[in-house]
Image 1 (cartoon, one colour):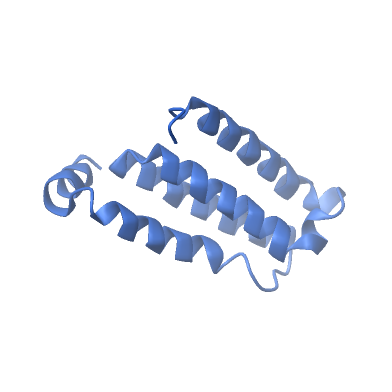
Image 2 (cartoon, one colour):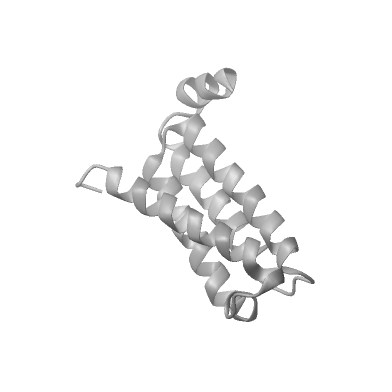
Length: 117
C-alpha cells in the first residue's frame, strides 16, 4: 500500500484524482443495477465496492471522494433495487443492516469533513 501511495503522490499527482474518482463512479454505478438472485448476492457486491472505496481513500487521502461515492452507492441501491429494500424480513435483514451501518458511517465521515467541502 505504501508503494501505491508513493506512486500516486509522485507519479500521478493530484490531477489523477478526478480520473480515479470517475473510474470508481463507473464501478459504483454498474453492478448495483440489474437482477440479483438473493439479497446476499447484492450484499457481497456492496462489500466489495465499499472495500474499493476505502482503499481509494487510503491511497489518495480523498475523504470527500469516499463520502461522495459511498452516498452514491447507497442511493443507487435504493433507486435500482426497491424490491430488496422495501421490506425487512429474514433474507433481507443482513443487507438492510449493512445499508444502515454504511449510511451512519457516511454521515459521520461527512460531518468530519472540513466545512468548505
